Image (cartoon, rainbow, N blue to C red; front, side, top):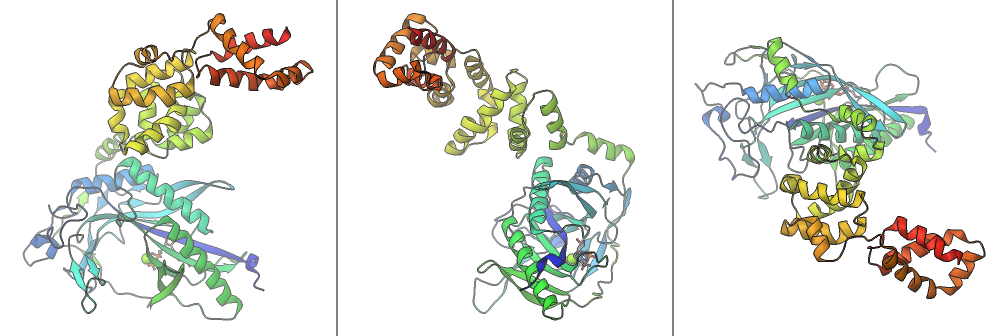
Length: 481
Ligand code: ADP
Ligand code: MG
C-alpha cells in the first residue's frame, strides 16, 4: 500500500487570459469569437514582409490593471521580444512576448481555502500574443488552420511553485477568473478558451526543500479538469516514486474521457527560442502618473467591499461572498443600498427572488436597473410589515416586474396588504383554533411551542395577510381563555 502522506505535492500554475479588447495586440483585426475562419487576418496578423505592428494601448492598460489588482510591481520600461519557433498556427515564425521582461512583477492572489485564507505568490504577469488554431477533427486526413485568434492579446499569469493541492489550484483559478471578470479585462470564458491553464506539478518527500522534476499538463479548459488533472498527476508521480520509476520532465495533456493524462512530448531542457527585442516595435515607458490614472479607474475590489459591507451593513460573511461572486450583482446591491437602509433585506431579495427571476427570464442585472425604485418600495413595504415577504416575493414581485406597475397599488388592488386589524385576525384565529382542538388542548397542557404552528395556520388561512406580530399576541390571548 502506497503511503501518500510521506509526500508533498508542489504546483505552479500558468494562466493565459485573452484580454477583452476589440482589436488584436498589434493591429486592428477584430478579436471577436466565433467568426468564419480566417476572416480576421490582415497582412500584419499574417506577418507579411514589410508590415508594421503597433501596440494596442488598451491591452497594456488591462495588463497593468490586473497587475495592480494583484499588488504586482509595474515595470515602467518595457519592450516586446520575439520568441522564435516554428509551428503551423504561428504564421510569423515567432511569437511576440514579454517572457523575460514582464510588465507586472511579483504580486499575489488570496484564496479562501477550507483551512483559512492563503496567499498565492505570483512570479509575473506578462503580455503576449496568442497563436492561431490548428483543427484536427474536421477532416480525417488534414489539419486545418484558423488564424483568427493569431495576434489576440493575452496576459500570462505565472505563480511561484507554491500551491500544494488540487483543491487550492481549483480555488486559485476560480479567484483569478472572478478577478479578470470583475476588472472587465477578460470574459473568463473557459469553454471558449478565453482563459486557459497549464499546471506544473512535482512531488517530493515532506521536509525536502529542493523541487522535484516537474511535469506540465497543458491547456486545461475547465476548472474541474484542472482539479482532476492535478489529482491524477500527483497520484501518478507518487506511484512512480514509490515503485522506483523514473520521473522525466514531460509535457502532458488531459483526457477528459477518462480523467487521466498522457504524454505529448518529453521536454528538452533548453529550448532555444533566440529571444531578441522586436525591432519593429518601439519600447514603451510608463509614467507614474499614467499608472496612477489606471489605478484610479479600478473598481473597488471584493476584498474592500467585504470590509465595508461587514462593518457598515452588518452582513454575514456568507452573504457577502455570495454577492461578490459577480460584479454586476455587487453593483446592483450597492445601487439598492443607496436607496434603502434595509441592507440585509436587500441582500436577501437579491440572493433569493431576484436571482431566480433573472435566471427564469434569462436577463441580466442591467435589465433590472429601471426597476430599482419599485424593488426598493417593495422591500420597504415588507420591512414596515405592510406586506408579508412570501406574498411580496411570490405574488407581487414578478407581476410588477412584468407590468412595471407600483407595488403598493398592485397590493391594494389585489387585496394583498397585511392587516393588523384585531377583528379580522381574530376571525381567522377562531377558525384555526376550532379546527385544531387536540393541539389547543396540548398547548393548554404546556406545549407552548405549538404557538408557531397556530401562527403558521393563520398565515395560511389569511393568505399571508395577517400581520404575524399582532397574530401572535392575539393568539396568546385567545389561548388563555
Ligand atoms: P518553464 O520554463 O518550463 O515554463 P518556469 O520556470 O517558467 O518553467 O515555470 C513555469 C511554472 O512552473 C511556474 O508556475 C513555476 O512556479 C512552476 N514550476 C517550476 N518548477 C516547478 C516544479 N519543480 N514543480 C512544480 N512547479 C514548478
Ligand atoms: Mg511553461
